[in-house]
Length: 298
Image 1 (tube, rainbow, N blue to C red):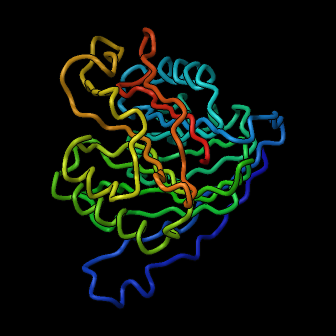
Image 2: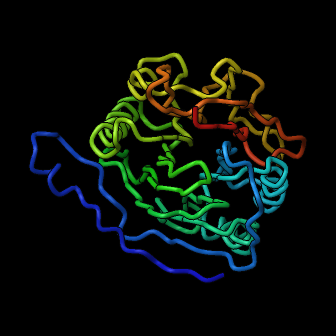
């Protein structure tokens, strides 16, 4: 694996000179990698499959869960996959990042949001079959205690054009007031840094209600939620050494894919061709279900 570290030059700068109470800060560096052993296959030019999957950083049965997660990732055959709760090593002898880096995705990005101790790492990884042209890591200004949630914003050159992606990791169980501030920071980035007529996709772990005011604020007038009618629920409880299935029982929805749609024939936007929630078989790799969407430009 040939790796390079790209310094990220985007700082709060001018935003900090305004009257805004706070601004998102960028990470010092983000790891970009190109896997020379991967082969870039031929894909449909007018569609892509995006997958978001939180691997769950809980301590229980991590080695077996990682093996199962890799099986699910291969099964989904995503063109672009974003993974949350990825670490350099969940615990001694159970590395997750090197295993994921070996998957057949030529273009990869990784950022470690939390690095408090070996058992409390939390990072995000992007696996892409197409070139990642730009990648910036941001840490939310508002976090509780030692938490460091944030997002990666990147441009990926897919066959149908260059799309901007915002991949989000919000700590599950974060205080409601803090999540509200984090959603406001996300919305501000969307409004200030992304062209209003550009192609935008968001995916990740948001930990907000699908029908609540925070989702309305995040979506604005231009974003749609993929598979919103499917009612994915999350159940974070455990059963022995394995996690319970993610869409049974009561719980909060955490994981979403959103895309900038267009209902105007004169303005290009993204169209949802298909979407779904994959319920893995036992043993369960995570308390989160993988969420996927097939998107095309209309």
